Length: 330
Image 1: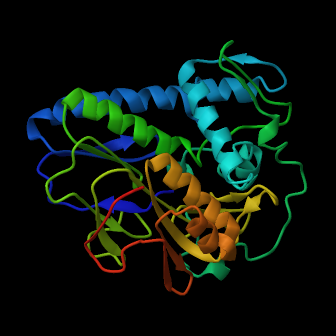
Image 2: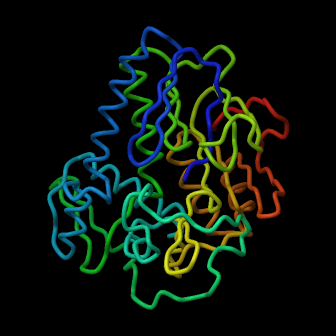
């Protein structure tokens, strides 16, 4: 999940719940807020109907139910799947949309709000108290998915279930920021569960954002406050979105090689990029890559902040070292 929380202080702001998480919209023009909110609300509703794994009437559910045959879908799901497959290619398979069965086996088979909370322990060792391999085949790999834009169809093999959780939320934030900015003719920031997209001219002082483990935290939470003027920010964490399943503490970042929640060096990874989608692809892949993540992010010239389980912070490729420093997404 994302773990960025936009700071307070913008007069034009609105918040609600959608896609199983919090939505925060901020605009540079007070008078445009209602138009922006309406446009963002409509966009997120369309994404939910196309991409939700928890709605029986969604197009994604139809694709999963129709595994083994080509299923007719609309252009929105086509785009979402193309984004997910691009993420798999860019990350060499570390971000794979065919882990749906694995994440269900980990207990994430219903909306997040309905899952059992984990024990109140925060250490990395509290995850997976007993090692247990998932013995069934959980994924055929992202290359098994066939998206035909011309025909408007999607094919996945029998036994494969798609999950777009690693990309769809950030992609939805980017889309929502664009439609909101167009509707309001102003600068817009959209935060979906703490993953942040911006579009249009920023406020004079930029968009100030608190980077922390949990986007639901207050402004006094440990973290770092930075300022951006464009682009997107995303955070992925194994420390926040957790639940209890089968006597174990689970989280939602799945290692496609093992089909299990990843055991990462990092508690939280934050990345800035030209848009929220690319930032989120990088944060998820970094958690899967573990110790190799800083070098990989640096090679991609992506500013990043990585926090290990002892609370040590590593910054990469121009991520600001001081609070309130300004950073331009590339």
